[in-house]
Image 1 (cartoon, helix red, strand yellow):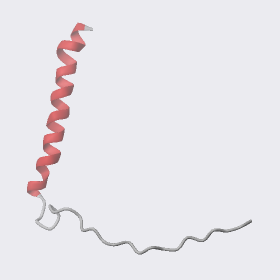
Image 2 (cartoon, rainbow, N blue to C red):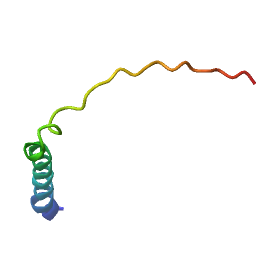
Image 3 (spheres, one colour):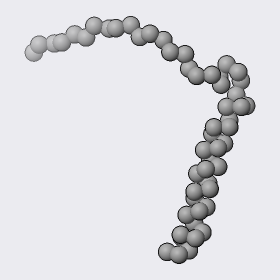
Image 4 (cartoon, one colour):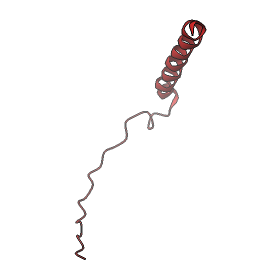
Length: 53
């Protein structure tokens, strides 16, 4: 248990941090049109039909 707490757990924490850092930093290398948030469009209301059986 001590080996896990002193060696494996810190390595996993650093590995998760590095993966998150790479994922966030990847936006720098995207083309300009992909680095922006996705556009939000209005969704038209489609009437729902209730079937009586």
